[in-house]
Amino acid sequence: MQIILVEANEIIRDLISLNIKTYLGVDVILRTNAQEAIELMNILPEIDLVISSVKNGDENSCSDIAQFIIDGDNDIPLIVLGEMPTTPAGIEEIATSSAESDWENTIKIAAKSLGINEDVISKRKIPDFIPITINYFFNLSTSCCDVYIRIKKGPSDYQYVKRIHQGDVFSQDVIKKYHSQGLKNLYIPKEQQSNFTNFVSNNLVKMLNQPSMSADEKLSIMGNSYDIATKEILKIGFNSATVQLTETIINNMIETFKDEEKVSPLLRKIINSKTSYIYQHSHMTAVVSSEILKNLGEDDPASHEKMSYAAFFKDISLADREELAQINSFEELENATISEEDWDMVFNHALEGAVLIRHYPEAPLDIDNIIKHHHGSPNGKGFSVTGQDSKFDLLSLVFIIAVEFVNELMSYKVKGGTPKPVIEELRKKYTSEETISIIDALEKTLKKSVKE
Ligand SMILES: [Fe+2]
Image 1 (cartoon, helix red, strand yellow):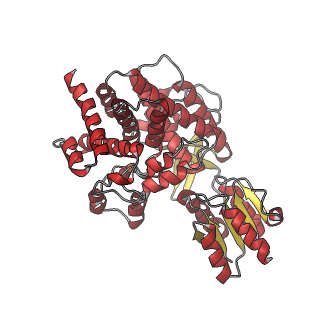
Image 2: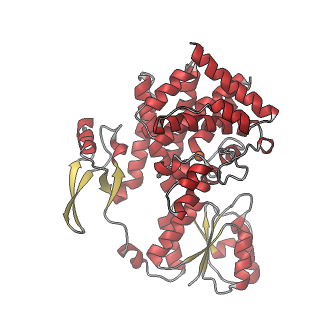
């Protein structure tokens, strides 16, 4: 049996191909655009099924593929990931649509098209309980469903014991105790998964919108919310809950910046907060790039918003892999002892982030380019060793410089040692007139902070 999957988003591509392999036992041929898929269909007439996202980049992939199938009268079923387009004529005859993030539904439709008994899927289905990382409970005092802990009874035999009843009010002491004992996951019934995500997300949004909260408290909730939002986006994609949470966090990032006269106390607060590396890097990059823009006289809200969006999403493909997100130069990547797969993940992460944000509803214009360029590489692959100033516009350049500066702050925090003279190094690497003015603006910020 042969299935072609046309999907430019690597995360969704992996998710669907892996699950088809797991549940249906069929290998999937991967392509990133319709043209390549059609070329393949020309030489491989025995294709049983094509799955394609509606659009890949600017290309209307599924329309092109549907047209090819209709023209050739090939009778190949097509699963459209996303909203089915109204063109070409006759597409309803061959295509069924499924939401891009709903892989379970996609697999079910695929099974049906291939004549595989759906029972096969339910038999291999995920267990009755699913793990939820314990930090999802850090800012909760009640739960929308029963919560269990897992106790090992034998080599592969587990028992699930109910610890929190739906609707019960529980104390954070209970959660902290489990956490200090090294418990990583609590469990919920699998059918509650999306309900629970929405519940956690709504709760965090409510907390973040509370006006009376100390700065430290707010940072800690923002950090936890950021970790939850990015992991959920990786897992289930954008839905109303993840989008609302993302927007609330980004608004809060912009607010914290607006409230401060000088940025260095804010950076100090962020770097000393008990939050993750990726969150700290992201929030500080938002602050530093906005401050540079302010010093350049480019103080408009739309640009600040762009900086915060870019900062939020720049390393999202590594949200589950904090140790990989700490690799910030080509040299560090070459010296890291990691698998080839992980190497690729780091090498392509800027591009991955850019591809992912294109699926975000109403993302600020050109934000994907700023994310793609964030390590100074024009195509979003790897890390620049030399400055390639002429290839970027102002916002990308500001963001690249901010990222380089924050890399240094974080590396000093994580590794210690002597702080590198980062401004001097930036001046050696970037020499165009425009970039020099950006570095001057960054230096002005630092001097202002030293003087206080
Ligand atoms: Fe990055």
